[in-house]
Image (cartoon, rainbow, N blue to C red; front, side, top):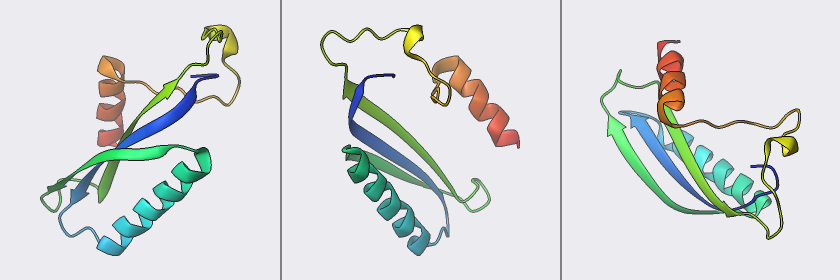
Length: 102
């Protein structure tokens, strides 16, 4: 959200059985470094392991919470080229369905 200040993240992992622990450690280190650089704390997470062949190695889902500074108007006028749009709900479900078929 343009102008909002991120504070906390959750991270959830779906791992395919046999996913290399060294790769998971590398991912976790990288996420931690990026979070520290952004001034954000990863405060919770979840891990699920699924049968071999039921996932594409690893799926990662994150969610964030932040604050909107007093007096800041969050509106479409603040959107700029290069901003990222994250979706959830039925639109997000559709995007995941399309991605899973690729």
